[in-house]
Length: 481
Ligand SMILES: [Fe+2]
Image (tube, rainbow, N blue to C red; front, side, top):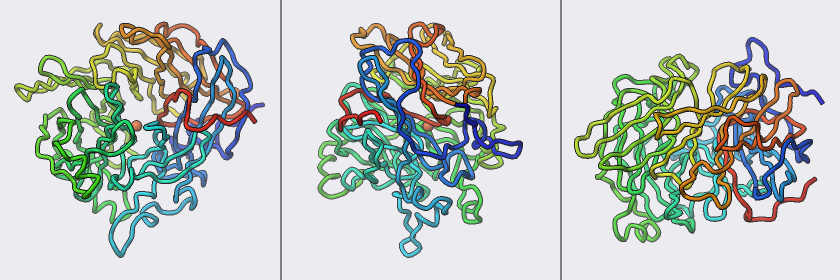
């Protein structure tokens, strides 16, 4: 069956063109074909979130209602595919003003349940969360039913970043929330069982758009960069964020452990710890959507991420500030100096590492080619060997095939010395057929043909982030339709 890539024409904005166009239906389908062999050890579900405006139109890529797509694998078979919206107040009222739904004119407070929940999907303490940085997490089931907004028993008093970090050593979930009013930035740490045990404000001079951060074994690293909240612009009905040359670009390093007793403070008295121990390091002006990782070594903290020289100088449709590319900052703790090194000039985004290396020294990183072309000729996945001058190897998809973020899944039994012994999973789109597939690549042999392609009889739009969640999930996987 041939299917359209979407209602594109010359006036369709980039974020609704080609495979960025939303799909109209929520479906459950059996995969239509498998090419290659799905590794029998892969038992679980791959989830990917992304914007899919229910009304068919949104003013910005970031504004579409969150839709999650999932494929279940077990025993060498792909059993089912499903897509579902996250049921939020915005989903319930397509096209409604987010501000109008969220703002209470009596209290002047924002309701953080009003969110698109469109950016990421993570698992923590047996729950699945759809995340978007402007609101609370939304808990969903493995079958993609929405359970509702989640606040960690009321401990979450701000929005929650869509990029929390799970410490591989402790199982703790580290995250933050930023707001447009004081306190602008709050850091949270939830234990492996899911309770918030640390919550503290981090002093910053104003609200900046903070999409991601990083952790190391002992620190968290915030990025206070020059995309600032524009209250006047927002009040006039314009974009709320803009580039501001006078805002210093800084990375902030905060010890990640709480003061003794702070966990009880949070739980019993609702106190918010005041932090004074963040240390700031000036960096060259830039914006960083995503970190790849950070780690400590010999009195330094190394942060790697995808950097653009500037962003949104003339508003959130202005992408003339350069394309993202992999970049490294080394923060020297003794001197306060920062050494910066561009690692590549080939544009790429969606950096991922093996999750068991988060916050730790690592050798490899994976990114996806990036272009502003709505219908690029093809897409590529890159693997960087950071111990060899960021040596890049490439998986090139066929002409007319595009893909998204590549999620690393370790092979069972992979030794600790084989960081890249595993698979890379991504959704790919075949423009000629109008349908999509899950590609499973060999991370150790990136140039090889995919180990498996799981084709589905529908189009899966380009989206943002996701994860492979191994079984057992918190409910039995739904039977195939
Ligand atoms: Fe992101």
